[in-house]
Amino acid sequence: MEQGAQLELDNQLCFALYACAREVMKLYRPYLDELGITYTQYVTLLALWEKDGVPVKELGSRLYLDSGTLTPLLKKLEGMALIRRERDRGDERSVIVRLTEQGRELKTRAMTIPERVYCQTSIPEEEIVQLRDQLRKLTAAVHEQSCGPASS
Amino acid sequence: MEQGAQLELDNQLCFALYACAREVMKLYRPYLDELGITYTQYVTLLALWEKDGVPVKELGSRLYLDSGTLTPLLKKLEGMALIRRERDRGDERSVIVRLTEQGRELKTRAMTIPERVYCQTSIPEEEIVQLRDQLRKLTAAVHEQSCGPASS
DNA sequence: CACAATTTAATTGCATGCAATTTATGCCGT
DNA sequence: ACGGCATAAATTGCATGCAATTAAATTGTG
Image 1 (spheres, rainbow over the protein chains, first blue to last red):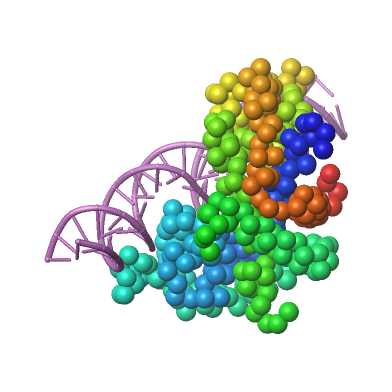
Image 2: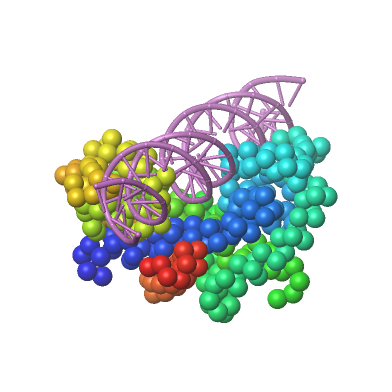
């Protein structure tokens, strides 16, 4: 690549990611507004619908978020009566996050969102799947870098 | 795809994007710390190094950011003496952003960052390029959706 | 020319993200 | 048992992002 071209915005993967992630998040807003939740709250609930009753720590490693982001977010979800937070009896350092009945019920309404968002785009499913898998691979590689090759 | 699988975190492109973008941004932090700037400030400077003397509006459409984000960010860069902000004489609604000598000089030090970050990952350049182009395509498609097919 | 509609930044309010620190709890070796 | 290290959340401080509103300037129209 010629001198300087590497610094160009459109040649940088990091900017493509940064811009794309935000644009895609914006697509979700109208659907999430119907449910009264934000995007981060949505992915947190996705994780909980998949596996309930997990410590904040585990939720964080699943979502790549730390307690600095999760604690206030989970308090908000608790305020909306979608989850409960309770200290782990076995290990008082941990806080276990559990869906309430309302939180579980919300899954039904959220069920149709991915399909509705997908229909808005004109991208073939095959490409979506390929892109998603490449991103997962990159995320894993990068995460390993910043956390040390020994980490899971 | 079977019932429910669509809601799983790891099947969702949006989450792959959300997680990957943040993890990649974290890779840049140590290098940007050397320059004393944040990631968003970095991409803003990238845009300016490529094309200087542009209105806030144009910078925003390039970066997919609005004045609510850019105004405070540009004031910070101005406080660091990396840019100047001045009203457009021809159209007093616009504010023109211009690099200072210091801002231009910073480009030299930033020059090596993409290469250094790239070397940290073990991903072949070919894959990086392909991923970047797919992301650009998706970003364009999604942006068109949210802004109306008539928009540029 | 007058005036309504548009356009551009700035401002406001709210919700993240994340580094760094603090607090509480568990663990481990002696 | 006990002192020191490790771990998990919570807290603090700062920098985004973005929707919604406001203020100023420009443009299009009759």
